[in-house]
Amino acid sequence: MFGSSAVNGLCEKGYAVKYEKEVERKPFDFANGISKDVNLTSAQLNAVATISQKEGKYLLHGVTGSGKTVVYQKLIENALKQNKTAIMLVPEISLTPQVLKLMRATFGELVAILHSGLSQGERFDEWKRLKKGEAKIAIGARSAVFAPLENIGVIIIDEEHDSSYISDSNPRFDTITVAEYRAEYNGCPLVLGSATPDIETYKKATEGEYKLIKMPDRVTGASLPEITIVDMSEEIRRGNDSIFSKELIDGLKDTVLKGEKAMIYINRRGFSSFVMCRDCGYIPKCSDCDVSLTYHKFENRLKCHYCGKAYIMPDKCPKCGSTKIRHGRVGTQKVKEETERLIEGAKVIIMDNDTTSKKGSHFDILDKFANGEANVLVGTQMIAKGHDFSDVTLVGILDADFSLFFDDYRSSERTFQLVTQVAGRAGRADKKGKVVLQTYTPRHYVFRYAQNYDYDGFYSKEVNARQVTKFPPFSVIVRVLCSDFKDETAFNVTKNIYRAIKDIKSRCDDFIYLSAMRSPVNKVQNKFRYQVLMRLKCNNSDNIIKEVFAITDKFKAKSNCFVEINPQNLN
Image 1 (tube, rainbow, N blue to C red):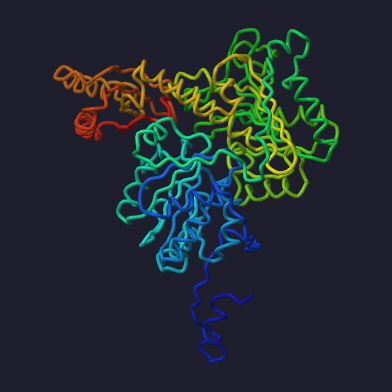
Image 2 (image 1 turned 180 degrees about the vertical axis):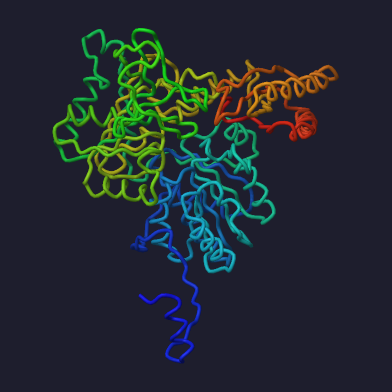
């Protein structure tokens, strides 16, 4: 290799000519693949025909494996035939590889990818290809809703219920709201797809704001996998203190023996979600955040899952000196360790935020699982949606009730969605699938509706409960969150905002609830956090929200304050 001075010298003597050539970076390196002509089912044909007729908002409610992705593919194809462009959004980076392979097989270089996992250079190149018209289809996570496309023919949001479509960091936005504006401006269809639609979206569909299209059957004709509910309290009474029920252990052994594959879902990464001293009860917490630390055995470190800070795992309690350290709830690393210990022939791979932090790691993990280098995939929510592996015949769901009792009105809905979505990974081809769901509350209505894949039954019960308790969609929740490095500053700003909003409340009867309090996670990255919470009647909420924004803006110079509408979590 020549240095720049040597090259310049050769150019000056006339032995070389220097010129600039633009070289674009490729954010993915897999081949385009082979496009397959697919015979659409009657439900798919109906969906494509209905949506293609005219602009509007559509909710595509199809069970897992019903072929929603092929419908998206045909809608994009129709848009291109009209010399238009298309946007397709998926909820997480982990879903993008499989979607991209399918779309690239059909549309080749017309596809551009946009998500936070790209380097700045790769993102710039993809953005530029869209802007110049070299690429006509933008596929990616929520930020792709801002793709620089004109003359848009269709906007698709897959797994529309996913909470990641709400950006709770700057810039803050609701992806579906942005998509609605862009679809209306371009006069094109907006398609929301899900096997488990958001309660508020489904209510809009039942009231006619969205056109509801149902796809109730799998394209293969296969039945949805049978869900067996296991009472873990009963397992303990029988002397089984393993994290796996006997039903799941037997299922894993049988699956591996047959040369098939299994997926195990647990919504906690790491080895254990906390460690505790048995003698004094001390639990290590992050010095910058008001949260307990998670133990990661592979690195032998304690980590904060809010700020990422790592700590050395102590040999003894820092408070009392005891060596009796107990591990709390298990995570993905512990599940991997136990699977390999109990199941002969199990080749386990993990998919969570830790194992997918490096560029391209999503592709590598999914490829290893697809080609047989691993026959058991253990993961968090990343494995719950969108993945389609024909030889996965068993799904295990651990601690299914973990999310059921959060202090959140959406906890039942989110648990139902997760169980249904994870269960849908099994039996997607000609082999029958089975799901083992482990819980300490086996009679809870969420699991009974999920066991029967009865979304309509669950929706009816849930929406009635919310109407009685006046939670969204029968009200609007507004949160003002204030944070500062000084506890006193954050407290005083919150108090003043609360007083100003309380004055609004005294002038109208549109408030169902109003309160100010410490945020449940009181400190994140050394900033103290307080919040004002209110629940408003729907009819006049817009006017009150405008006043809340105006009040909050007055205090932004004193503290970091922002307003959230129907926030995804209140931590």
